[in-house]
Length: 175
Image (tube, rainbow, N blue to C red; front, side):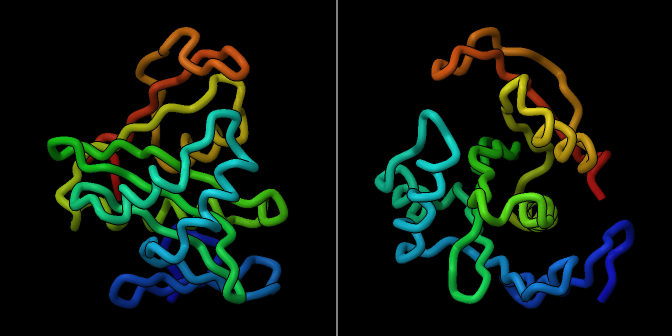
C-alpha cells in the first residue's frame, strides 16, 4: 500500500509496520520495543548521544504503561528506535536514534511516521520533542513531519553545551 506523501511502500498490520527500503536493499520492520531488545537499543543510544540513557532507563520504559517505544529491525538486527511518553494526553518524544551505518536511508523518518500514526490510539494529541539547536538534519526531518519550533531551552545540553529547540506538532496539524 502506498501512503500519500510517502515515497516508499509500507503497510501496517496490528502493531507492526513493514517497509521496503528506498534502494530496495531490504525490508525493515517497525514494532514495539521488547525487553530482549534493550541491550541493542542501549548500544545505539551510547553510539549516538553524548549523554545516553542506560539499559535500566529503557527497561523502565518497556514496563511503563504511559510509554510507547518502537524499534526498527532489519534482518533480525535492531537498527533504530524511538519512543514517546503520554504526559496527560500530550506526547513527549524522548528518544529518536538510528545506528550510524543505517542513517540517511529513511529509517528515522519511518520511525517517526509510525510513532505519530500510533499516538492517537495511545490517547495522545499534541506531540513535543527537544532537539539540539545545531542538529540541522534532525530539525529538517521534524519540520518535514509538521513540527514547529515554539521555544528554546538555553544551555540545555551539557556535553557539549548547547541550546535545545522545543518543537511541537499540534493535533490539528497531524495527518
